[in-house]
Image 1 (tube, rainbow, N blue to C red):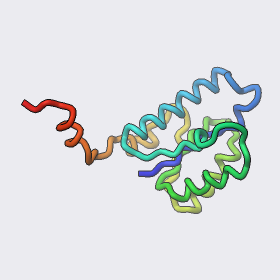
Image 2: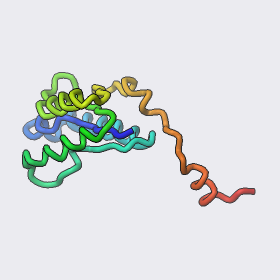
Image 3: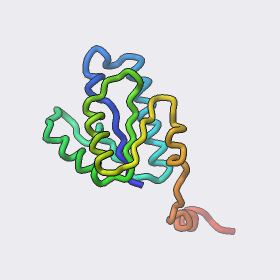
Length: 133
């Protein structure tokens, strides 16, 4: 499946930057992304799509990415405002994507997506990198 993995960004760009809550959240978000990739999904990370200063024109790229995905997951912690994530979530709903809120500590909300997908290349890998006896 094609997944868009959203998170609040602007909330952290102030006195919340480099706080214990910020670090804990970043680890959680990264873990969800890693688990989705390991399960075989194609994951778009909008927070990693651009480097440098943000320009609102860049949002068009993220909006296009949403329209090409099957699933939209956002990892916003309780009590954290996420205005950009909210508008992206609304677009995902309008586009008919499956939408999941997976706040820290609740990977069970997407446990069905974390089961490894069948790997069509597993036999190729085994034959290429292992010696059969």
